[in-house]
Length: 455
Image (cartoon, rainbow, N blue to C red):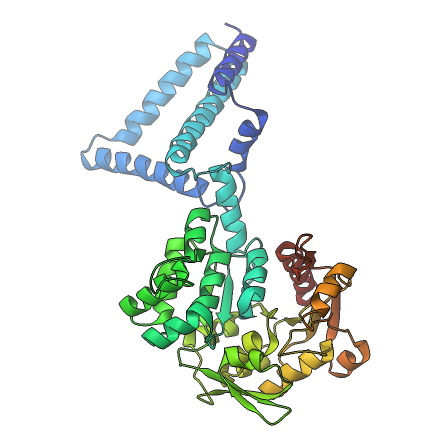
């Protein structure tokens, strides 16, 4: 039989094996050859181990396997060379070798995929490649709380799995406040939102974690995630361990850490002389805040938080409510000092709109000054500001509640020594006309700035 006929037969074999598969499926096998997946090397090591084990057993039994193997191989090659010329037998051997390698590898991968292939449309190789890429992403520390932080995390998890979210525990309203009063636990609300935002495609579990009870004596208004974290705190002994256990359940991409394990209570002094205690009461007081602090005065930082800041490649502060989500984290002196001392790129994400009861009439520079004054030192190098003004209808809606776009006073920001990063990072709901940061665009802009600042 000619070498051409053998080549055609090999092609038919390959076609039979790949019958019903699309070209994309064939391309998928070649992805397994991509460097960095840590798959090929282990298969090769296993095969080498099998070979060495077999040889070792034979040598131990004094079967002189190497001599007989070489002698047998030499005789076979001599016989083949006599019957079939080397210019024919060589290509045939190479061709069949490649066919066997390809067949063996594809069957191996298929068997692995049948067991490990995740639900959904993603192939196992795509999941592995994404996993490797995300694990090589920059170590990002994000400081904040509220919906702003969870929005940002939802976008960042696409670029890195090395995310640490430092979350305020000063919340004393809603479900978190009730659990705090009744059980003496730290408020789990912001932590729950961040865990759900970082969950890796666990849609059902995320919806369960965010589910809020609409009926039931004592359950109305509570979210399942808050109750779950409260129960886990009781079982594990503290909130940090409860978060770690919950992260495993939700397949969280990154870490969520409370700024402190102390029972922190916010207070604020207003321009009219009033002193307001309690995070939820500060906003409700609807006054101009001139000073903010917490009790106890110097809460200790969680050691894991300080370690994350020291090891960070990039630190992001915000977005979120200035006085009730961002600054409470920075009232932990060790956190503010650690951020101030680091030399990595640091940026503050300014809010798009002012917030009634907190930042009415504030400009971008006013936001920066408030953070600097609360911490006693500058903590970041740049500020991200949204470029475009919301629609007229959105402006009308916000004006009715006393909120307006945060004005960018360039000269004042420049005098404060901050660089300005301008970009369109806003989403506008057509039904409600409320504006929010867009997770994907916000994360993309922040990572682009990091790449430039880091280079």
